[in-house]
Structure formats: structure tokens, C-alpha cells
Image 1 (cartoon, rainbow, N blue to C red):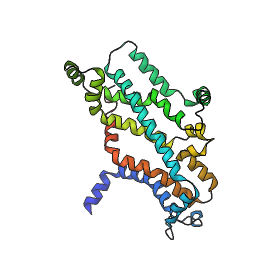
Image 2: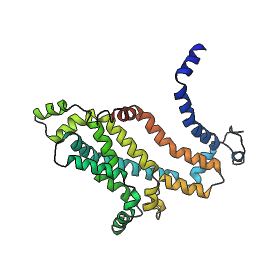
Image 3: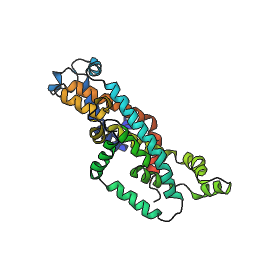
Image 4: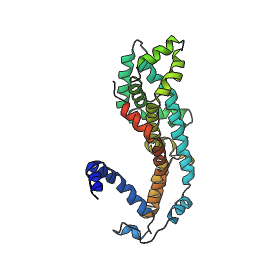
Length: 273
């Protein structure tokens, strides 16, 4: 008993924060298993359990298709971001070239630029290319890099000692081989953190899919589909709660398996600026 009290006293802040973040999820899960009538009462615990609510959600909307669209968008955008942002971050962190500081300043300025500022010209560009109504306007720009990801990766790469890179260059490695064989294995936590930030952003992105895919329901992502489902079934809170919980499960599972690398990457980023 005393050991339990000591444990609670030592971790009281962490337990309080955990309860604060878990309470809405628990409330959502319990509501998803209630009847429609009970959701309008103040009862928090289901009078009877109704897991069939989840099957009813799938019968009312093609949720699997929207999950597939979202996984394709998030996966391809994350892969494209890594292909472009990792070499850019490496050049900013480890190579000496004229204009490097100016480029870093521009990248920081781009992070502060609201996306709404460039919405009209960018939308016209994709519309002229007949790609609106698809997910490609959300994926292809990632091949040009992402300002936040470049900044995050650069902050991690500067913590890698230059001696490892110098040793590789003395052994005859070029810059690309040094990046692939030396830097990438050491930068896995930082890359994992950047990848997860990008994946979570794409998974929850509502503004981009609303702008480019709203006209074509076949290419909706889960955030857009969930908003539509909530509009159509706004009084059926048990179904809305079940649909919301279903959309959360993939990212929770992903974070559960990658949390060690994610936390390590976020912790080490910014140790050296």
C-alpha cells in the first residue's frame, strides 16, 4: 500500500496529464458502444454493450476506401518528403557553401508563411494540369521538400560529430555515399520523428483534401469523410463516436510501435543549433 502511495506521489503530474489526455478517448469509446437514446443522457457507462455500432458505421459509409485513400496520401507524401528533405537537411547541416545561412533563413520564413497565402496561384497551377479532384496536388509538392521537416532534420544532423564524416571522406566516400552509409544509419531517430510528424499531419489534414478532392468523393480522405458522416448522422452520436475512434486506431498503433524512435528523435533534435 505504501509503495503504491509513493509511486502515485512520485508520478502525480504524469498520472494527471495521462488522465487528462485519456479521458476524452475513453469517453469516445464508451459512447461508441451505447444505444442512440443513451447518448442523450448524462450516463457515462453503457447500460448494454453494442459493438454492432462499428459494423453499422461500415454499412453506412465506405470507410475502408477512405482509410485506403488516407493511407496512400500519408504514405506517399511521407516518402516523398524524406527523399527530398533529407539531402537538403544534410547540405544545410554538414556542407559548407555560399548562401547556406541565407537559405536556412528562407526556410524558417517559409515555415511562418500561412498556406492560405499561396492557395489561389497553387490551385490554378493544379487546375490547369487537370489534377484537381485527385490526391496528387497533395503528394507531388512533397518531392520539393517540406520546410518544417528540413529544419527538424537539419537540427538533428548537426548533432552528428563531423569526425565520422571526415573519416568516411578520407576512405574515399563521396557525399552521397557518406549520406547513405554513414549519416542515415546514425540519423534514424531524427528521420523517424520527421516521418511521423509528416504522416500524422497528412492523416489529419482537412484543408488540403477539402480544397483539392472535395469535387470527387472517390478520392476523399478520412478527415473529409468523417466531416461528411458527422453532418449526415449528427444526432447519432454513438455512430459518430465509433467512426471517429476507427479513424484514430491506425495512428495510435503506428505511434505505439514507433514511439521509442519518435521520442528519441524529438529529444535529441535541438541539442546543438
